[in-house]
Amino acid sequence: MRNLYLTLFLLFVLSQLSAQDCVINLPENAGWVGTTKHPVGEYHGKNESVTITKTAENEFEVSDIAGGTFRLFDTGKDITATITMDCGGIGETTFETEFGPFTIHGGSWDKNTQTLTIRWSNPFNKLTDRVSIITIKK
Image 1 (cartoon, rainbow, N blue to C red):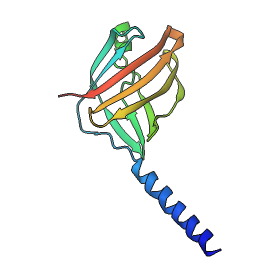
Image 2 (cartoon, helix red, strand yellow):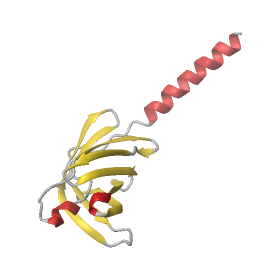
Image 3 (cartoon, rainbow, N blue to C red):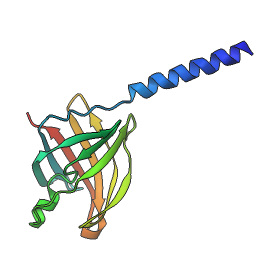
Image 4 (cartoon, rainbow, N blue to C red):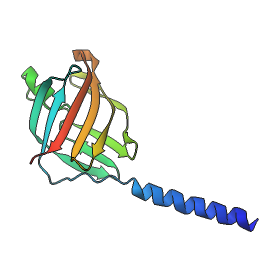
């Protein structure tokens, strides 16, 4: 019975350590540039004033997850969204915008290259399989 308690205790400790290892910290005070790629690879938008603000642990508000795409429609508008991240990447979510439903399909943060990649779609405007690449200004 003692071995069972010891095993459970060790599993608990390991779970706590791995949870702490998965805390994501995006640089908030950096200047960010967002660009968006079409499925075929060409760029289709740019926003040189993206901001990222931490709203909770592993949760961030990104001022323009579409990387300037909707500025091309002469709206001057950005798509602000809250993303949730963990060691597995960015969680999937769908929300309403003035441009119709918008879905974040996932993504990742590469701390070595300081690059946030967000996969998204906006079917109402026939924008599918888009990828926003948000990097720190150098």
